[in-house]
Picture (cartoon, one colour):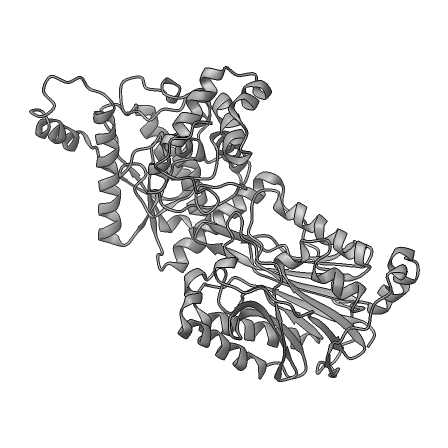
Length: 575
């Protein structure tokens, strides 16, 4: 067969939009055929979107997705397409349809069903047992799905060593967290080199509730070198020519591989078809997008998460509280970059405790970003609350109750504008605050999407300074980045009045939340007092009831408050 041209359609689909997703897949098949591709790959569960969760319990949903595969099969004249969907065969399977030259030729069922972290596939799917070996002309391929390739002795190794597959294709919906792209690519390079095979990995891209899929699809040669790499956080169409004969020649020089000679394994035979495009022999241009740096990657994930959550849920505009602090400033930047400044409104709600410089800095930021602002002082509403509550509060001192009333007034005003104009409210609380409960239910926690709920305070500052380096001039005033953080709900208030300094707090939170470290280990490793660690852990555990009522937000770490984090609200265990 000579060289094989592989195309990978790294697409952004919508869960449940089977008709729209099918149109996008059909367009990818047509595009691949136009450039003379032999094989085109689409992500895991591309027809249904991922994860479809309890939609998989609806027979009508399953049937609609099966009908879509039948429709797509007729679009594959002159090409082979591998498309992710949900198969039904006495049970439900996470599956890949092999569509070849106008027919549905074969199906592969995913073997390894992840049931950790954000995954819950055991709830919905049965594990597959088929081998997924295909022979296209005189070239043998192995097909697998996402988790299958993460195991060293998983289906791809069996396909290569026992089935003689020279090209291993893996369709995936691999969710993002910071640094995962590098680790995943290194794993794929290892699989390619260990199995002396070309690996073509097609990943999903887009936001789905709190999950973000980063794309970064890759094609790796038999020596572990990257031949092609897709973009991060955007749709892409990756094309590369691979040489199965080079795989054979390389294997002749690999004693480890030759000592484990391939067994005879049945393969689904797909007759070769002649490419229907003139100039098929021309080699496609190199497509090797460079990965983003650390902060740019996180910012890209946050931006994509916001854009897709807003648009896929039918909104076009958002509103957020602009306090003049670093958290709301960063969220305003992300929203403006994700949706366009014309679709973002900042709401200034100053109280008797709001410093003039906070209002000035918020307006300066808004002007630099080009977003609209509305200013509504809350003093009259606050006085009305205090007068209304004067009798039942008689004889008591002012405390956090009066502070929270201000926050809840603001929450009511955000939601009023949301109801009136159809704007989605973005909340601005960070992970450090959410961890210890330094947030007000039905106040600053009120809203539709919590943009930075998985971003610790130190990362908020780092992202803000990084954002100031993008573009002709900084957009976040320097004073916002240097003044002490404050909720400004009482005179001269600072966050450090209620919390340890963030440079002490954040490492403790990372150790306890993301690494499950014991208090004594945190005390020893971080050289911080036992009293501080005990206090922080108690705050984290007691705040679970608040977090359960918070809106979803973008996941960027390995342990976000959401599907990753499921402690009981009512419990008495003390670590």
